[in-house]
Amino acid sequence: MRWIDGLEAAAAEKLPEAVYRYFRQGSAGGISAAEATAAWSSYRLRPRVLTDVSTVDISTTVLGTPVAVPVLVAPTTLQRQADPGGEAAMAAGVAAAGSVLGVSSNAGTAFADLGATGAPWWLQIYVVKNREVTLRMLDAAVAAGARAVVLTADTPVVGRKEDDGPTVWEVIRPGDLLANLDPGEYTDADLAKADDLTPDVIGWLAERTGLPVLVKGVLRGDDAKRCSEAGAAGVIVSNHGGRQLDGAISTAQALPEVAAALAGTSTELYIDGGIRRGEHVLTALALGARAVLLGRPALYALSVGGAAGVTRLLTELGAELEHAMRLVGSPTLADLTPDLLSR
Ligand SMILES: Cc1cc2nc3c(=O)[nH]c(=O)nc-3n(C[C@H](O)[C@H](O)[C@H](O)COP(=O)(O)O)c2cc1C
Image 1 (tube, rainbow, N blue to C red):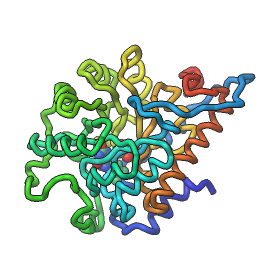
Image 2: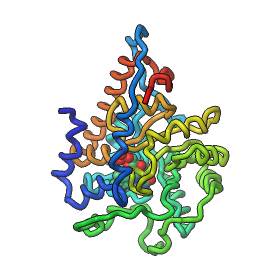
Image 3: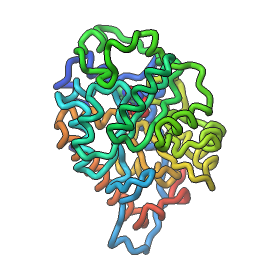
Image 4: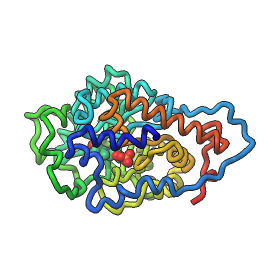
């Protein structure tokens, strides 16, 4: 059996039930979460034959940072529940694979402890009602060497989860979350998500941090264009792993429209949601993404194998991508173009 396919079941064995359920779940009826992977598998490939694929190169750059594999790790919470090392273990695994990771605003590891791993990382930010709290977190991330800010734009309110049984909030420990804020310096009301954001927030974040800003959660071409015009260095097509608006379009379906809207701009295009195979990565790149991000598979790999598990996940997906590129007759990432696909 393919190791990656067994990860979720192995993580389910190992994790407390409420944690596993939290990692896996989607919002509301779970429609978007359930269909994400199938949407990638619905594409068909039109391989080129008689091309020289004796050398295949899957390395690239993401916002100027070189990566050995165009598969990055998406920001997710509660990594200390997956492995005692939490985000630092995730970062070590990512560094060994030559990739980049997103670090959640809700991380349970001090940003300063990530730097020691040598992994390039992007801070994911939820702008909250008390902007002073947001600014404190941004300053801490800049000081610790974050290379970009990922603004999560799909969360004016948190998606409704329909749990039956104990929720994760009953099992988490102090320190699992929000390790980068001083507990005396905020209230729950301060941390409520800002629901009045407009594209101006992109310039505000860029100015404060001096870092490139990516907008995560874009599913429409017109929104991608607004972000690009407001100065976004990148856009991440995402429906938050089906954890925000249930019934939101799959990212595999949304990507062509967003790619068309960003054509001719310098805004880099990324995508996450349901990507589980090298062929899915290939499809995303052929549709115009520069790299993909993984959420749940990275959490499961961290749960099952710690940092080494994360390295193995990224390396095996890279090997699958390389193999698939040989079979479609594309020796470089630049050769991955939309004409390779059919629906
Ligand atoms: C348990 C869990 C926690 C998450 N936490 C965050 C978060 O703190 N910030 C954020 O922007 N996205 C968060 N996400 C969404 C991921 O960044 C990503 O968009 C999604 O997981 C990708 O889909 P996939 O899990 O199918 O790969 C979370 C996802 C999961 C599964």
